Image (cartoon, rainbow, N blue to C red; front, side, top):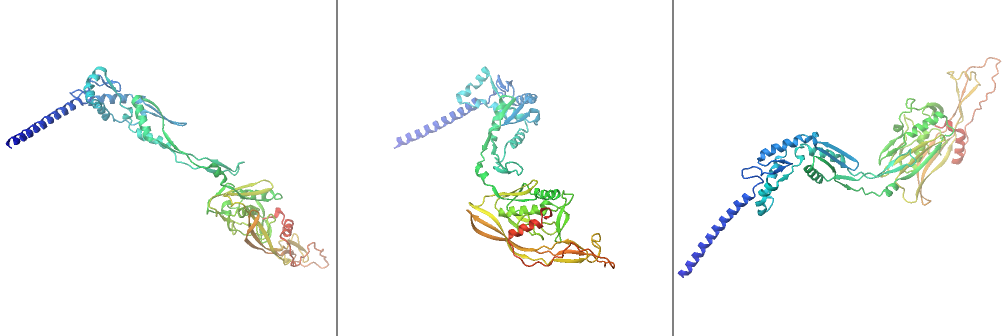
Length: 511
């Protein structure tokens, strides 16, 4: 038993000695590694002979001395730095003197000093000998002296990068092709990490650098054909003013041109009066006939109502919501009853609202004979078309002539004595009428909607009579003016009324 104890003690002592030996060896190896993993400078803290940085011999120099020499040399050569970056057809030039001066070489010189640690143990043993015999040239990038390089690169990147812009339709109402396609553009992103790395590497090798900016393009995925077909002509309406005076045509054209090229967004409301502005001589309008008190008189802007009426009919045929519309006191001959739109800056306006989910586009034109409005927008449901229908409910008979004494002598150059008559205006019959919008599906009427119920009030004729009594023995010639009696109730078709209006309301007198 004692012998076994001795053996155990002997083994324990041997293990302890083995541990001490291994530990000592580890320390020795660690010291060796520290010695052989020394930086690429000699034991006294200086670079090995034949060590070069950017072609300059720093052998025998301390890190601080090398830093000073290298920095001085790089700053002297700063004006030689030329950086050209390009992307597609654009180019940017940067010169060394464009940058602020910076000193970032200190950590880079220290990195050079760590050359001996790059290999394994046996390679490190050869580092000093290899450098002394063959020399070693390290490079420090010239980016280290360009202080605001990142800022300037960011400015260039900002010019290159772009957000995606979707393809769109371009409305060009005066061109032969009303709509064209703007293909938009892809999203462009710059690979900033690659650009920085490429520039850093290039400036390691040369002071003159030309680099392509690496970009990533994200394609704009749009079906151009579907986009082109998404907008169609919803309606077109024209009226004739071929026989109107030049001044009246000017007024109609000027008003309707205010809407040419207009794009009305969903739920947007448009006022005719606000769009055309005041009808004044200063705004280019001229004198033409307007209706005042049931009588045609000259007034600035006469004829503008033909522009509003043409627009109104195009709107309702496009199924655009009309919020406000009024009829004239005297019917116009260029449209059926209940389809005119009287405007006056003081009290009457044509107001409409885009009730569709997409924009509507208004194109107008006017030549020497006709004025036309076209409305474009999203398609109707397949097979759907819209028409108008005017209904003459009844004729409202006039009360004949009203004879008025010229007590103020306003017409004394035409009439003077009792029994002399001068007609101021003819009596006109009135009309009760309705306007309808009809919806057809594949040629079959599926719905009819009343949109107007109007009363064009009859107008009395006005005949002026002289006020002085004839002198004794004076004979007053028989007057050519025949006093018209109250109209008897008659019936007629809407078309017959239209024909009558075209004769009694010729275009030169239309509002």
